[in-house]
Image 1 (cartoon, rainbow, N blue to C red):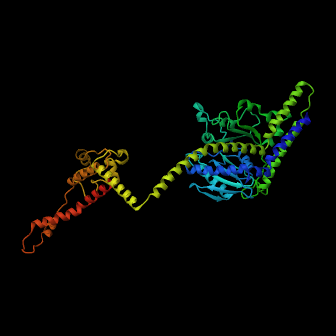
Image 2: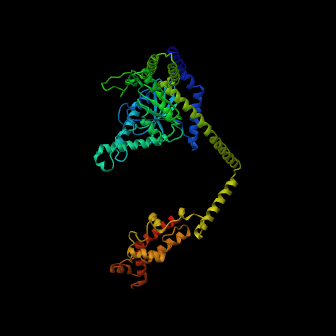
Image 3: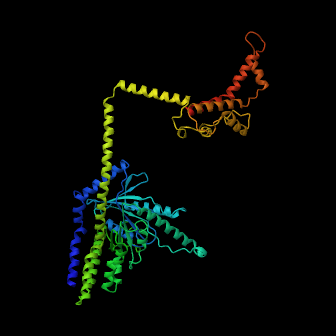
Length: 566
């Protein structure tokens, strides 16, 4: 029976190895393949849906996990190259949407960062990392909020990238509980700030997980499946985990902690997870990511050294880590002793069944293949939804285009003149109606109160060089008594008439200019035929000059008001 168990392990290895090799991946997802063509068609449909403003969400994998759970390292392993800052603390304060595209011609990652204007620009890994760090620093100093729900959109092309969108969310914070009630004073400011940040990060992550088209990758770092802190947060957005794939990280550090093969078997089975969430989408998967950084700028360890010369070495180390984990598990399961009694046979049979069940869930390659298949299903479902919408839009555009072409074919000089004359007649008729009085146009859109009108072009009572003979309080009272409709929304002729009444009131309230004796003497002058004074002409000269100084600004204000009304 031990031999049978090892045989099952080797069979599962051979069945799954084809999914883990890049040659198999190239054949299945590369250019010219069926799935590669599907992704290209899907991207085109997605662009068309955005152009025509049709509801269409791209399927994506939202990665959720607590700080120091291995979430960033897992994302790097799925991408095929190192990108994130790895380590404890808050490294991401804005979600990072990684749109990955498999491109076998890219021997090094090609990255594009989408700016605030929506335009993609090529950037190096270092420049993107500096942008993310700058955003983290900005939010860390922000006195109002510590996180920002707006996504940082990055597109990547690489020979190891899967065709997938990963959304790296801020790490959940396991903050200590802040005392409440009478003991509230015992919490210091740092504890309260940490608790507030934890709640803010959780709200952001839960809001991202609520999109029904998103697959949730729940990253756990636990030895006891009864306690899943990340799983509890995920269930706030996906109660039955029907969109959730569970993955347990750092398997290589956990295996040595199991004293017996039976304990290891129980851990890998995760029966309690199946009982609690029988409708979960997938998992739990088990993964290990090799420690160490790639020797590029910013990729050195604390002692200034690096572990990998390039990303190819990192990918190979990930594959070696997966093979090593599976080999150790196989060796541990080999220690299960054959039993001759009925209960022993049942236990070994259960071990064989468990081997068939959980071995396909051990390793990054298995997790990656599972996610790609689920994303592929989402692609197909979304294509089935968007195609009818785009077909309907296509038919509508064709009908409108046919109408336009018919009108263009029928165009002539006479028809253009007749159309212009009809437009002029219609405009003049509408203008005449609005002046004579009409209720066709909605007053809340086109009408103005006197306060709105004065706010746009100014008041007759506040003109430089035209002082009023009444106080502001008296002016407001006179507006109510003599002008009227002060608070009504008027347009057209009614608004015109109200402005004329206000101008009439301003003219009567205008303070008369002062006339000096010198001005009177100079206006008298001398006549052409006699040396007497022409008092009528002198009065006209004085009146005209004073009106030019004091009344002209009022007339200019009336002109502006009339232009505004019309």
